[in-house]
Image 1 (spheres, rainbow, N blue to C red):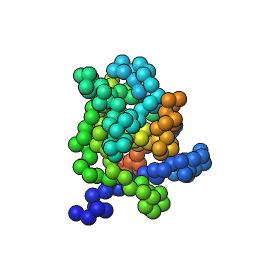
Image 2: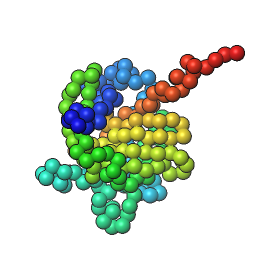
Image 3: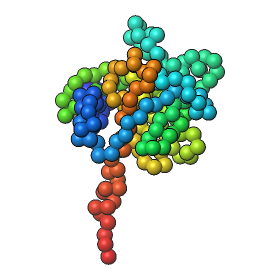
Length: 196
């Protein structure tokens, strides 16, 4: 397998800080919102604005999620509150290193040009659900803010930090972009609809 084939390709218009303005975001997304996610407890009560994994192991080239502390104390879940198009969602997550393959890399692109590649740190990858929303699923990385997919009863949404690499500024809250996943399946079914 070639190194290129082993990469996870993300064509999500990442590196949004290049857009940086409301106008830049509206050119990229038809429907988006800005939110500041919170780290919470199991009841949804505020703990902190810090949502990224801690950097205590950066010198070794590895990152460990804040949830490691929680798991050592017997607390298996990690919780975040995220407002998605006016609705507050309470995410309940468990560490899931099997969500990505070993040695997987993420390639951030803009306008189909390679900007950079970095390894996906499996220590800060989580999956789970949304409390009080049966059937909802979530797959999130908190290596650098919250980045991933939220599948709720109202649709599928991507979340990512507005600016990459700003973990040090999270104490006062860090802006994230939430945008709807294009609904290709619905568009195809509408095109194939036979009127009689």
